[in-house]
Length: 154
Image (tube, rainbow, N blue to C red; front, side):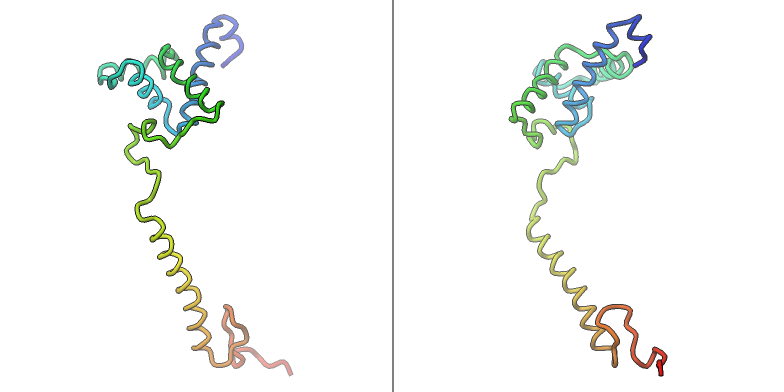
């Protein structure tokens, strides 16, 4: 924000602070700013944001830099929850508009141990195979030079 803009229009500084509150709440919830507006709208009015209202709200917030009072209230409550240590950012209610938000992997422990097994098998299997194939190895780990490949130093 430029100093002369705030000097001639002090209300711009207040709206910038309000947008910062929305942005901070979005960061805490790990969502986008507009999604925070959608969540605030749903909580305040008890219904989803209509398509016709979406365009108007988007243009007022993103272009006109106007933050609705109900969005400020919602963002401030999120910030207060965080300050009190009671904010659960993984709560599915905050991610109702995220299509791909996943908090856990189905069958994750089994997949982890399976991947660990295969990685271990490949590494140690490769070392074992290299040890068996080399006739007169100079070292156990790569590069696998044999004594016959290196020149004699006599």
